Structures are given as C-alpha cells and as structure tokens.
Figure (cartoon, one colour):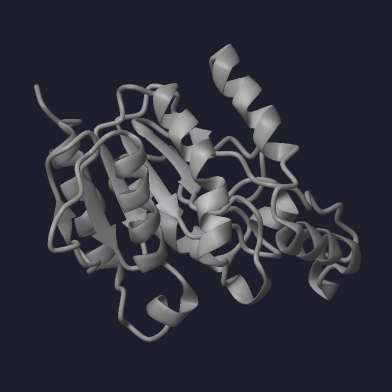
Amino acid sequence: MSRELAQLEAQVTACRRCPRLVAWREQVARERRAAFAGEDYWGRPIPGFGDPAAKILVLGLAPAAHGGNRTGRVFTGDRSGDWLFASLHRTGFANQPESVRPGDGLALSGMWITAAVRCAPPQNRPTPAERDACLPWSVRELELQPGIRLVVCLGAFAWEAALRLRSALGAPPVRPRPRFGHGAELGGGPLPLLGCFHPSQQNTFTGRLTAEMTDAVFLRARALAGLDDA
C-alpha cells in the first residue's frame, strides 16, 4: 500500500463525524454478540482494502455490526462477505473464497473494496446525511487510485452514493436520473457504474440473488474494466 493510502486509512479510522454512528459502533463493540463474547471488537470506521493498483471499486452499504465492525475489515466475518468472496474467488479477483479476519491470507487482484458509509449503522440503515459525510473519504480513495475504471454498486444505497461520487469527481448530471437494478449500467463520465443486488441474506436466502447472478456481474465487470484484454 502506498504511503498516501496508509495515511488515508489512519484518517478514516479516527473519524468521529457522525455522533449516532460513533455511539452505535462503540456500543456494539462493548456489549458484543454472545458468539463473539471473547473477541476484541474493532469498533471504529472501516477503511477500504484490496489491490492499490485496482481497476474496479466495489462499493457496499456499510460494515455489519458483528462483521466488519468486529473484525476491522469490510465484508469480513459475516454471511454477506461469505457470499461475496466466494464469487470473487470464482471470478478471479480473490485468491481464496472466504474472508475471516485481517491477516487470513486474503489477497485481491484488480479490485478495491469499500463502503459508502464506513461505520456500522443501527439496523443497518445509515442516513443520507451519514452517507454524504463519508463521501470525501471515497473521493480521496479514488484520487489515490487513478487506475479505477468502474464501480460495482452493491445495492441501491451504494448506487446513490456512487452517483454523488461521480458528481464530486466532475461528471455532469445525468437526466433522467439512472435507476438502480441488478446488472444496470451507467457509462460515460469519469466513473462508469455497474449494479448488483447486495449479497445480504435478505437477497441470497430468498433466491433474489443467486451465485450465478453474482458471478455474471463480476465477469461483466472484468470485461468493462478491460482486465482480460490481451
């Protein structure tokens, strides 16, 4: 990781901009879930992680209270992450199919993963104001990774955050406003978008999102970003 990305990570993890999120993430870290009662929770904002030379940014909603907020890495130690990394392994982005904790040997190729909101929110529902308070962190990540060619948005909340990110990077507004959908694409501008249903249990347990659907999105992402070009 570059020195600048490491500095950004230190700034993100010290953030206390949103009082509601600070109170919740720290309460969860103190009280803990019974299954993790013996673990030390991270209980702070979660920085992005992955390949500093990435061409694809995966944008999630927010860390899970007992996933990323526990382990200190987004999509790590929860069911959504289990689903996501299994797909990333099948589609050539991850060297292993699971993300358990930092230091578990996971490495990403061509991809950086982060969240629209960096702190675990109550009921997994951040507010628009909390989303917008986190926007400068995403802007800075992209400034430090100029090779990123595409954002894969996991869910409608991430899609809306990515539209704001495009605007912050100087893209003109698109009318009518592009709607989120699984497989939806928005080209042009400095940051094309690709939509994917969020790999939450609400989607995976009900069959709304299948493994084949998830893989198809990431294979499409590879093509759009030119990762398989000769």
